[in-house]
Structure formats: structure tokens, C-alpha cells
Length: 215
Length: 215
Image (cartoon, rainbow over the protein chains, first blue to last red):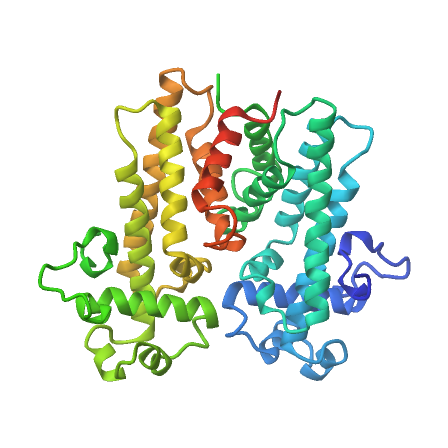
């Protein structure tokens, strides 16, 4: 699961001390930058309609230079999925503090997920069609494991909340599914930079789920 | 919005009295049958990888015969979207009874949506990538209007529930979005014919939304 090191979220990679401010981002972390630009292209034109030629042009880079890092468009797609799921899980795991009560932990989980989605919007759009598009079966297994880890973290919060009486007796599987459905569907209607932030939305969803609709 | 008559849900079209039992379904309503088979193909292989030749073969039909009803694969895709949204809206509208209290109306709306999704699963899978894939801009407007009508029906239930004190003061827009997110994301994990029915899921989601998580 940790074999795709390049797929770690960029936030977790400190900028190298040697990096000059004016340096093009490509030079800092070429793999991450290729993934970012490719996701932008896939999200805009669709995977099938996008070409490595176009990607190279958009990056002001030669196609051969891209081949130094990835052997095909498909490999880039697979890496985007792993990058996104790794970052999603790590961001949520970092946001959830053991000492917080379950209601708060649920809120931090949802906010972190929403924030990561907004920050990596094109990756999520690329991922919307799902892991079925992945070619490398080992990476696909990694993707499923990462998704399960992310969902597992959430189920744990709910299970503990039920155990300590913070929540009523709900199914952790069903409730976790509901939380992730709310957050996942944001990729279909939410646009970063609009009126509400992704965290505003997560806050509202959290309130709805916790308090329900009854007066 | 009603111009694509062929896109009406099949359930609303009574079987013609003259139809013989042994008659292949194709003869009853060829357009609806083409849409159904095409959705099956698109859901399985993806839109891009599917061809009219393959569709014709799967239907035991000549390609020319398909051209009697649709001029292109794209036209079939567009018609699937309109068929799905029309059926979704009509099914929900029929399920919601004015005389029921808002909590019940919300439940019927959610159950109807889930049931229609399960019954037309391939159409929803085909639609997952969204209306952005539609080529005919007029039909795209129809699709958006149908989606708005479906969402409008839901918002009305919530608004009335808030007005008569059945629900606390929630935003109808946000709550409606949450309900549709829960139901829409089912296309990514729910498989018809598995353990739980789509209506079981809708029932659980309704309970979660209405009662919330607090004990």
C-alpha cells in the first residue's frame, strides 16, 4: 500500500530548503506535478480524449521527459487514484484526535474530507468513474485498501460513539456509507471557489446528520 | 420537456392488447428496448468502447433497423438520460401524496427514487458521468429541467415540513441536496439483487436523516 511513494499527498512533502521561490514547480516534484496537471486535463476533457502530447504541451515539457516518470497515460491515471485516496485517508486520519468526543471527531473527519476534495478537485473528478478504470490490478487492490482504511476510520468513530452513548444505536456500516455518500457526491455539484466553501458544506451535513430533521 | 415521448418510463406504457405473449419485446416498443439494451452495454463496457454494431448483435437486430429509431450512438445516450430523469421524476411524483405528513412524504419520495434506480440500474450507471456527455443542447436543457423538477418536489416537501413544524428549521436546498446525494451515490456501491433491496437502504437513510445520530 505504501509502494507508490510518489502518490503521497503533496501537503505531506515539505518544500525542500534548496527550492528557490522562482523555480517552476515542475522541478520540485515532477511526479506530483505531472499528476496534478494530468488530473486537470482529464477532468476537463475526459480521460479518453486526453493525450500525453497535450499534457506535455500544457506543462511546457517534452513528452520524453514525462516518460521518465510514467510509461503511459494509464499509469498516470492509476497513480492519480492512489494519490487521491492516500491523501484523503491521511488528511482525515490526521484531523481526527483520539481525545475528542465522537461528535467532534465525526465533524473533523467530514471537514477534512471536504477540504481535501476541494483542494484536489480535479483528482476527484477524474476518480468519479471509479476504480474500474484502473489497469494495474495491484494498484487497484491498493486503492480498495485505502478506501477501506478511510471508511474504517469513520466506522470506528461511529462505533465508539454508539458504545459511549454519544450516538443512538445506528449501524456503523450504514451510517458510514451515508457520510461518504454525502461527501463523495460533492464532486458532482460543488465547485471550489464558489459561494460556500467545502468545509461550510461539511459543517451543514454534519449538523444534519447529528441532529436530524425532527424539531 | 415532453417532446421526447419515447423516453417515458416503460412502466407507464400499458402493454398493447394486441401484443402476443410470445412476441419478442423489441416489437412492442422498439425505442424503449433499444435504450434498455444500450444502457446495459454502456454500463458494462463504457460509452466510448460500445458500438452500434455490438448493440445490434446483442439485440439480434440489423444496424439499419436501429437507424430507424436513432441516428447515432450519441442520440441513444441522450435519450437514455431523458428516459431516466423522466421516469425518476414521474415515479417520485406519483409516490408522494399531498395528504401524507411531510415525514411520510419524504419517505415515499426516497423509496420511489431508490426503487426506480434499482429497476433501471444500467441507465443510472450510464448517467453517472453526468449530463456533460450529452450532445443535443436542447435535450440537455430538458435534462436539467427534469432534474430541477425532481429536486423541486423534494424541496417542497421539506419546506412544508418546516412550515408545519414537522421538521426543524433546516435549509430546503441543503437538505434536498443531502437526500439526493445519498440516493445518487447508490449507483456506485449498490447492486440490485444483492442482500438488501434499494428500498431497505432508502428506509434506513430516511430514518437516519429524520432521527439523526443523537440518542
